[in-house]
Image 1 (cartoon, rainbow, N blue to C red):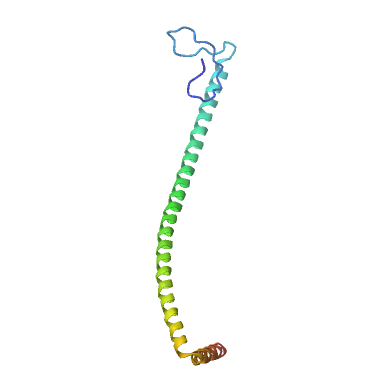
Image 2: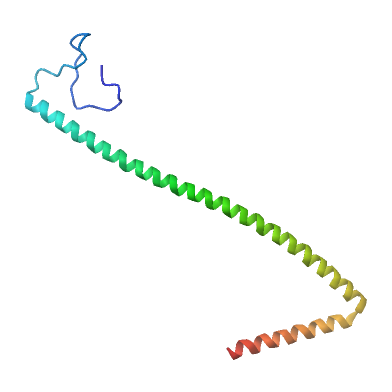
Length: 135
């Protein structure tokens, strides 16, 4: 019966010698030196596997930390976007009220209001151009 750990083994397992023995019987054709080398290479492979498992564990931890950071950033961004949405909604309400009052004033004043607005835009534009030229 092969080992139950799921790992492959460099050993050639035969059937167990008896039901009372828990150690496997190695192939009789192998010499003690090759058994020692097999055991040594198995230990080396096992240590390499352990090192790789540790490396993978470190990488998984790093990825977990990164994903946790991304999740925190997404939550914070969602809160900021909600606050910005509320601020824009409030600003929209203020601007719509101001625009409504301005339209009511324009209706009362007639065409003179449009002339004043055009004059103010030209003066504002003139100040902007002069300011950029003086820089």
